Image 1: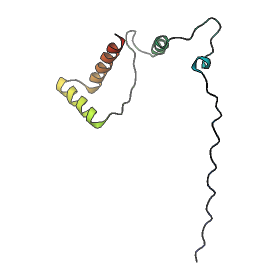
Image 2 (image 1 turned 180 degrees about the vertical axis):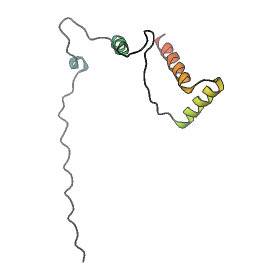
Image 3 (image 1 turned 180 degrees about the horizontal axis):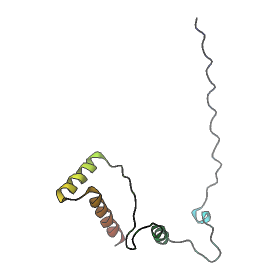
Image 4 (image 1 turned 120 degrees about the horizontal axis):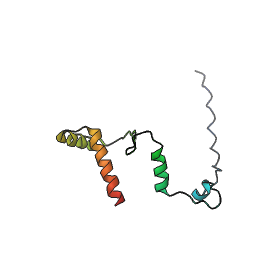
Length: 101
């Protein structure tokens, strides 16, 4: 009869997470008298750090789209005689305008 290998012991359960919940306001330490920046202020500072021309900011973006959506966008770009990247850029810029008005 062939010799059976001993089974390894089952893994021990993971220890409970003992990380205390942190309030977002407490996560950032500001000197007394200084308030937390607004999301708009944080976004402006973040975009300002990107190396690009003064009126534009470069963003490298990789998207994972449903195949049907990508095919529709590609058809639209071909019909307009444009690159897909330019079409997506215009769509994003238009969406950003619509969201702020």
